[in-house]
Amino acid sequence: MTQTDLVIPRPDDMHLHLRDGDMLRAVTPASARDFGRAIIMPNLVPPVVTRGDVHAYRARILAALPDGADFQPLMTMYLTEQADADEIAAAHAAGEIVAVKLYPAGATTNSDSGVRNLDRVMPVLERMAEIGLPLCVHGEVTDAEIDIFDREAVFIEHVLAPLRRRLPELRVVMEHVTTADGIDYVRGSGGDIAATLTVQHLALNRNALFVGGIRPHNYCLPVLKRERHRLALRAAATSGDRRFFLGTDSAPHPRHAKEAACGCAGCFTAPVALGILAQIFEQEEALDDLPDFASGFGAAFYGLPPATARLRLRRSDRPVDLPARLSAAGVDVEIFDPGFDVHWWPEPAA
Ligand code: NCD
Ligand code: ZN
Image 1 (spheres, rainbow, N blue to C red):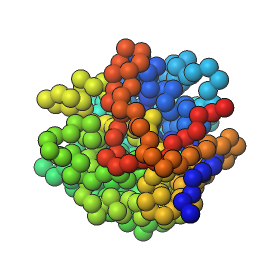
Image 2 (image 1 turned 90 degrees about the vertical axis):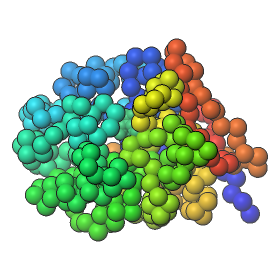
Image 3 (image 1 turned 120 degrees about the vertical axis):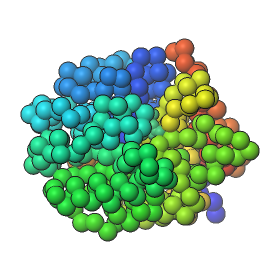
Image 4 (image 1 turned 135 degrees about the vertical axis):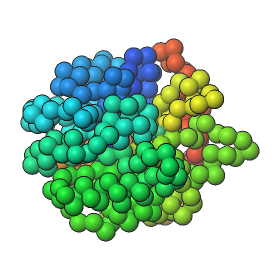
C-alpha cells in the first residue's frame, strides 16, 4: 500500500541564502514555514564579516519572519584574507555563529571578497580547528582553464585534501556536493567531515540546463552534473550515512537577473524543497531515511538539540500544483521546477 502520511521532526536547512532588503522579506516566510532552523549564508554585498555584521543581519532576518514563526537563523561569517581569528573565536564562544564560510574568490555569486590564497587564512583555520568551529566550503576551483564540470573534483584533489592533511582536526562541511568524486571523498576520508546535498542536484542532471533551449532557472553553482553523479548523490542521501544531510542552497535572484544575457547562478527551492525531497525519497524507496537526512544528521553534526516540533507531509494521488513564482515585497522570483510530478506536500501548521 502506498504511504500517504509522513511525520518527521521539523527539518533543518543547513545551507540557505536569505539575502537582504526586499528579497529577504519576500523569501524568509517560505523557509520559516517548513524549517525550524537554517544555516544562513553570509554572501551579502558587502559580506557578513564582523560580529557586528552578524548581529545586524540576524536582527533583519528576525524582523522578516512572520508573526509566530518557529524558525531560528543560525549565522555564519564570511572568511576573507583579512579575517581576525580572535573575533571569529569570540563570536563562536558567544554562540553568535555556527560556522565560517569559505568561498574561493570568484567561485560563485558574491564571492569577490573570498579567499585567493589559503596560506593567508591558515592562522584562522588553525584556531577554528582548536575550538571545533566548522568550516563550510564552497568546493570549486576558480581557474578559468579548468572545465566547469571538473571544478569540484579538482578542488578536492588540489585544495581540500591537502588542507585536511595539513590540518586534520578542522571540522569541514563540503557544501552542495555535486559529484561522485565528492561523495567518495567524504566516504573515504576519516576525520570530521560532512557534506550537504541540495534538492536541485538530487532532482536534475545537466541535461535540464538545455531542454529545448537554455533554462536559466536551473543554473546554479556548482553547476548540475551528469546523471551518474546525480545517482551517486541520491545513493548517499538515502544511505543512512550521517555525514550526508540536507542543505537546500535555496538561492533566490530576481527573475530579471536570471533571465538575462549573463544570468545569475542560484535555484530558489525553499517553497517546494520538502515536497520534492519526499518525492525523491519515495522514488528511491527510502522514505524511512528522510527524517535523518532532513532533520537529524545536520543538527547532530552541528551539535544542536534534536528538533522537538514535527512536520507532517501528506501524499495526494493527484500531483501537487507546485507554485511557480513568488511575488512579494516588490520582487518577482521564479520557484524551482523539478520537472517531475510531486505528490507530497507539507501540511500547513495548525
Ligand atoms: C549561490 C548564491 O546565489 O548566493 N548561488 C548558487 O548557484 N548556489 C551561491 C552559492 O552557494 O554558490
Ligand atoms: Zn549556496
